[in-house]
Length: 448
Image (cartoon, rainbow, N blue to C red; front, top):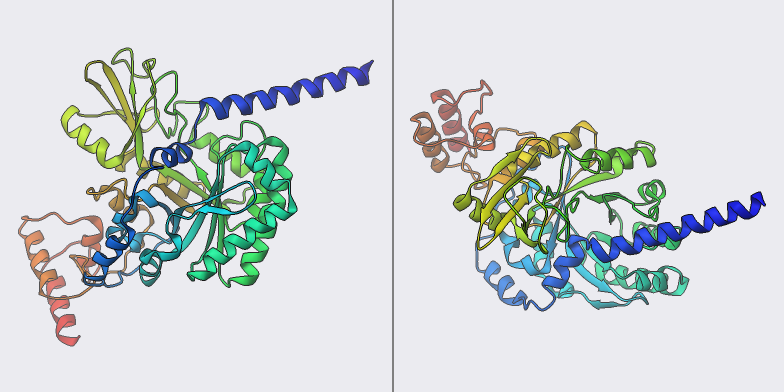
């Protein structure tokens, strides 16, 4: 009787886990999946973008003194921004994406084989990886449960990376079924061994969820196998949430960034050097019942890039939510709406948290979403760059009279320098920019 009861309990638990997973997949659509679908029909003029880049002066390499990994996803629909990225503040870029089918074939690589961006980024000292995606639970089951299909995927990804001399691969398998937990470990083991043996110094990472609702993810094995887990630390409130709220809360909720990171540290035996905290350069804009914080929603949210949110905030103003370390904008546009997002202040707090937990670094979804606004780069610079003063105050990669002009303007209080610019100008490290620094820079220019 006891054995029979235990069997019933185990079956009930299994049904419950399956139900939670199914419900989560149906209701909570991860943002990578949602964004891919939103841009499914975008037509990108890759060749024209690359041609324009070749007609521009090649930028000088800026010095890179980063103390952590900084990994950004570059979605194909943001391809046009690649010349404008701060490569000195990035260590790896994951090109999103190569779409796999259930048999391990690449069915859409979004022009991966012909991208001028790859060599461009590598010339700036940044590694480029191809992100492979498969987002359907049934297709993942077909792929991962077959040794033939797994090997086919590995062979295709290896060929795609080596054909363009890229630096590795990133795996983004979402809606992973519980019964594929061990098969995913097998796949990643074979994938990593193949890449590390065939592509010297290659990097293999994977995107992993903020909360493992069904227990499908073997964090410990995957952390030991790969070169890093990119924790998608966003979508705590998602487009279909019943109430508006922070996309990436640090505090204020049971499930938040702190819960996620500590959960990973616990299940990986504090393997912090393999953990990357991914953070959002986007927000969600919900229709809501009223202007009260966390108001019930009345429909599905639209996703807004950081640049779009900033344009909205310049008109409507924003409110700081101290409990979750997030910004939000209540406004009326035929009905009440709330837009929740992260800015340089909230992201800086999460960067500091990642440093406090001694994580390998942080990640960005997605590069280009801040197009036209520099403050997110400056937040990265403040937290992760160990500045070595060279006198290049205007950050153009060269030392000349323009740097002196900028320094004089700062001394005359006609121009306020960013923290990085100040570091470059304070060449004698006395915490002030004055005539002494200018004299040193003049001597460096004359000696060069």
